[in-house]
Picture 1 (cartoon, rainbow, N blue to C red):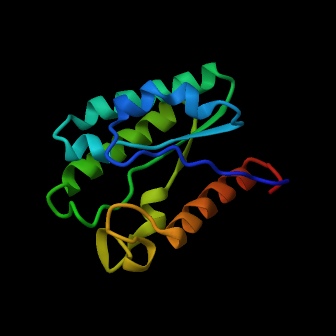
Picture 2 (picture 1 turned 30 degrees about the vertical axis):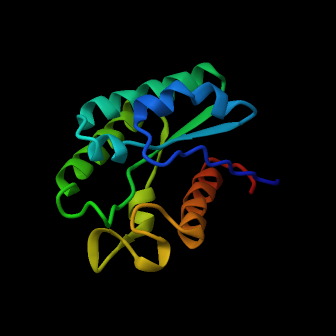
Picture 3 (picture 1 turned 180 degrees about the vertical axis):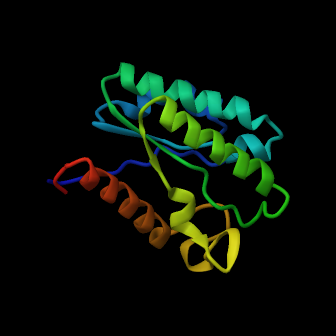
Length: 155
């Protein structure tokens, strides 16, 4: 099987903005991975509202007939430690939503977290402390591949 990943992330975009363009981004996909919320926190918006936007994206993906997974919020070097409590709370909400909506939770946070600096990405997995670099994205792709294999999808 050949897998093709498409990243529709837009720098600085909140979950409500992601939701507004979800249908366009999901066009032609088989699987939708929903992830977002850190920009909501950065922009002073409520994490619970961001979580509800993520829930609505999951539901919309299912309506579109896609297999859906939900990824938690990445470690964030440039916001730590001020944003840590809100980010942790959002990840708790994300885990509860994944369970409520019966979708797989992808542990993106743990895949990139530096064990020596909790809440932060390892420097070799980010180019500026906000987003993964190529190696960081490889690690996230590994999380997705392991999840697909766990569901019996040959990869």
